[in-house]
Image 1 (cartoon, rainbow, N blue to C red):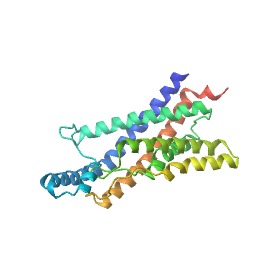
Image 2: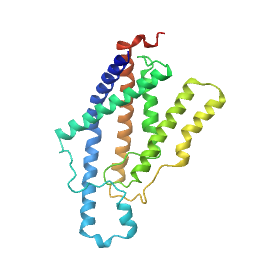
Image 3: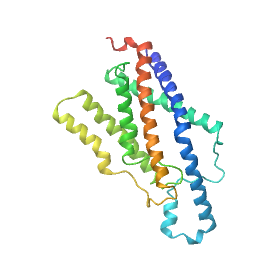
Image 4: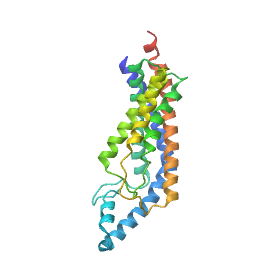
Amino acid sequence: MIGRIVLAALIAGMAAGILMGGIQHVRITPLILEAEVFEKAAEAAEAAAPAEQTPDETAAAATTHEHEAGEWEPTDGLQRTLLTTLASVIAGAGFAGVLAGISLLTGIAITPRNGLIWGLCGFLAVTVAPGAGLSPELPGMPAGDLFMRQIWWVGTIAATGAGLYLIAVRREFIWIAAAVALIALPHLIGAPQPLTHETTVPAGLAAAFVSNTVAAAAVFWSLIGVFLGLALNRFAKEIYAT
C-alpha cells in the first residue's frame, strides 16, 4: 500500500513539475537573466573601484547573491531549461510526497474533489506565508543571513501548516485562536533582513519577478493537489475505506 502511495505521489509531482518547468522557462527565467545583467554590471563596478566603498557598503555587499569565482553555472538556453525543469520535477515529487504523508498521518483523504484545496493549502504554507517576510529574490538583490533565513522559512512553513490543520479539523474557539496565533507567530518574530535594501536591480523588474513567481507557485501547487488526488484515486483509493 505504501508503495502505491509513493508511486501516486511521484507521478503527480513529476507531472506538475514538468508543467512548472515550462512556466518557469516562459515567465521566470527571462527575468532572472535580465537581473543577472545588472548583477554582473554592479560586480564589475565594485571591482573597478574598491576604494570607494564605505565599510557599510562592504558589509552589505557580503549579504548579496554573488557568483563565486570558478562557480559552475548552466549555460543559457537548453541546458538551463532542462536543469530548471529537473529541479521542478524533483520539488514536485517531494511536495506531493509531503502532502500524501500528511494525508496518511491525519486520515484525511486527498481525492479528485478536494485535491485543489490541498494544493492551495500547500501554496499558502510554503509560498504565501514565508513570502510575507522573505519575498522571492533576483540575483544581485541584498539578503539577510542565509542560515537564519532558512530557519525562519522552515519554522514559518511548519507553523502555518499546523495552523491550517487546526482550522480544517477543529471548530472550537480555543483551537481556532491557537491556529491564528501559530500562523501569526513567525511574522511577529520577523524574518531576517539585509543590512540595506539598496540594489541595482530595477524595482519594476523585482516586482515582476515576485508576481510571476507567486503566480507560478499557485499554479504549481494547484497542479500537485489535483494530480495527487487523481493519482491516489487510481492507485490507492481503498486506503481510507477502513
